[in-house]
Length: 561
Image 1 (tube, one colour):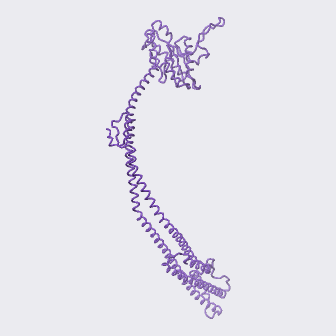
Image 2 (cartoon, rainbow, N blue to C red):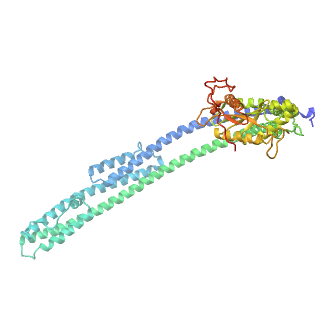
């Protein structure tokens, strides 16, 4: 059912109604975007500069803190006092205001760290002095031990205590625990060598000094141990202070990051309403475009579906598409008209095609015998210009057919031809086909055969044709007294030969047929058995009496099945 004119719009009016609001909304959205971009751009530039400055400061501070950690580690572990002093000065320089950008509220922590570093340096000096003192007293103590050994056991030149390289490093590096163990071991070994009072005055004097040196060395080792413990405690306190300064940096960075986040939040709150207006405009544009898209897509989809259904069913849809757009209604009407026109033309085309196929079929059949005619043979030859190896041709000719026509009339002769065609067609293998070549001659095309197989097919046809009576012109169920006979010529392409044109095979079979006629009829002759292929098959001229043979040579006769 057609819509009223008042209920439909032209496509131009519809597009104008659809896209004018979209253009207006798009202009508003672009203006909002430009405003937002300028506002955000100015603030982003300022925020970027501050962020770059903070990043550079943070990188410098963290690098200085890492260098401070390395200096403290060198200060605590190096055995050289000069390197310890260099590490102390480097750590002091790294805590200066020019190296680490601390804010004013963290100045107290920095001064506290510097005071702790100074105390640790004094502890380091005391350790160095104590180390030298212990080392000197150890040498005195060891020398007294050597004197005791020499005075008490002059017969033995080996010192009772052997020191390894590792033991020497323990003494040189002032390893408190190892040095104490060596002192006690030497004291335990040498003191039993000291005699009772009055036995050896010199040895007694040396043993007394050795005992006093042992007491003083143990005392100074203990003092060095206490100094090292105090220094280790100072280093631990310095590491804690350094970690506290690093945490202070993290707090400062976090606070500045929160300030940036708050600034971005304020900026988002200012631009939020603008974004809402932008999203509303975009939403309205999308809604309008979607509505227009659906109003255009729906009729196109319906038309496409109607065309697809028509292609499948070849039937004109019963319901015509009706939409509120004039152009689509007109397009729908034209498509439905084309549907009807195509259906009518298709029905006529099917009818003409059927008639054409029927006429072509009739044209390819012989009107008298019902088998394929010469036209069909020419078409088969055109489809396969050159026959492949293993292809064979039979040429059949009805013997003395002219006598049948002259004696019994052409009506009877037609009956004989129909019987012959039926017998030949029914006695051929499935892939062989017979054609009426002309008059009483027939051609059989046989693919995929050997020369022997082709001869067997020809012999079977000879036997089958002999079941037709020359008196009735019909095929009998058993033997007849006056059988109809045919002469057959064969031509084939052996498997080892190349392809050959079918007309050439037909010509060869025709020559073999004439040879069969000349040699007595009712027989099969193969072209390959002809002694002279150029012999056209005509009867030879009478030979000279002196040279004439007593009997004419005969071609090979294939035995009957």
